[in-house]
Image (cartoon, rainbow, N blue to C red; front, side, top):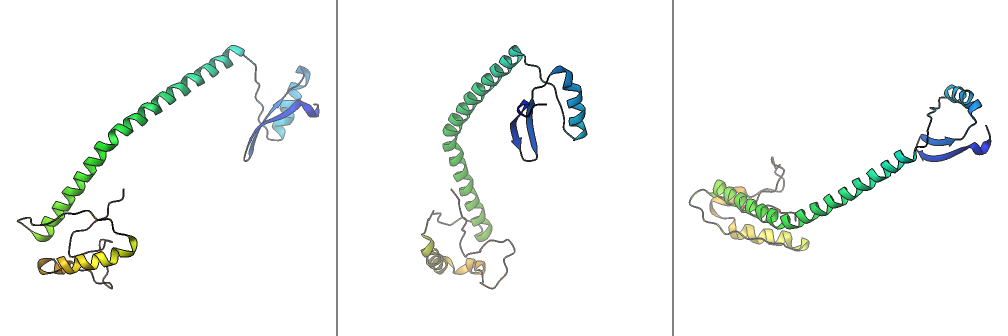
Length: 164
């Protein structure tokens, strides 16, 4: 075999794909020598029609994927507002249920959404605890040294984070 008869087509980690051009009389000797060195030999016969069919099929599939991706993107854009609205409603229901479970009936609470700066969150929580920490909600205060069984901070008011 001539040194220029083999060309590296693709290499991926431990594997490599070579193309080897041989005369018919040395094909069997090459296959047996390659198998002895743990190489796999596969014959390839060029069929222009089959290759053209594969290329055509690939282009059709690529077009179909692009069309479906565009349709999915459009659907996501139109559905985002509805999903976000439903999520906010679920958050409101959670707020209502937690307030009733903590403070009982009749419901008497004020719901609000706040986004404090990171530096002022402790100060805001202190003001809210001072304002709403009297009466039945006093037992919801969490001590700094106390272990929290649920993994969440407890406050004398209903509070939960919404990550947008």
